[in-house]
Length: 226
Length: 226
Image (cartoon, rainbow over all chains, first blue to last red; front, top):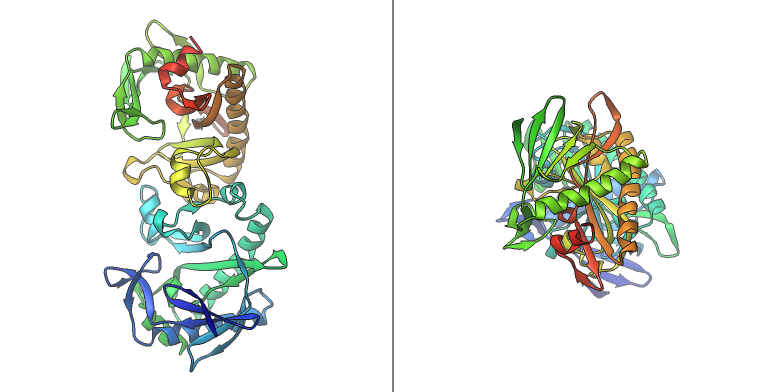
């Protein structure tokens, strides 16, 4: 196993033709407080890596069963690792945020027109992964102009993303939980750029989930999937 | 004449059923330096109000002749005033930026993917007029979600905007000048929301124009239209 990348919440190893993601106990946040929209590691939570892996595996298996494209191959819960197929990322990586309720950076940008918690009905936006420039919002036209993603790829991504976000929202709903927003990452097949594929993870680390008007911590959310 | 609004570069008066825009000698900028993307009055330039009015009238008359919808009725160069038909603005107002070359806020956002001055082929983006939140970028989906503009209105606006921006670019080209970007404002007819109309002004105050790799000041640009 050869370490090829150290991320904020995961390290990535090469294993033959596949990649192995090692889930760490770090989560993004600001001033020691969890924030899925933050750009830096805010705190460590003991055991959260394993819990996020369990939750991710649950959702990836569901998606694979539905023939929705993901990079997921298998998980090893003892080792805290997930084996995935290597995919190409768009540019230097981007995040696709699906918003059901207004909060976080949406309110910071559009607070003149929105109220905290208002319905956004699955509004989708894309941000570039760029810590230095605070993950700027970019339009589909901007992605095409900068040769990061073609308009055709964007349309495919948008459709796949909405199916996945909606599946997550519905699953949470059966547990009495409300999804405010979820941040997913997508790549594309190295030999087939039109094939858009969900990458990264699906866990409490990249979504805001409420139970009866109370934001759940990643640990509290993971307990629903343990 | 009843003063109804004091803007950064223009005051607005009500005259019967029409509005009268009084062009001032203030331009937007930062630290005493002209910047069409800035949110505050940066400096005063003696006579620039009259010059901007001349340039605006030139373009508005051209557009009206082509039956492209504008709010322009007439100009009074002695009084530094422009008479216009009152239009509704989208939300609290927005700006439509057409970019032919990468510079300014585009580089601040997308500098990881772009080089200063690279071709952008008329890429269009919309920002909300919101000084407090630094005029945030918003997508057509965001505008629709927040009930600022319907997707149908956005499509009409985008088509009209590109025709106007292209006309401005071509006109400058005949004078040996290169348009980097232009920021236009649109509203809609109070009785006919599907009718999108160009409002505000078209002058050196809302575009970046280069002559042989040198950015022209608003006064230098206006001299080409005097």
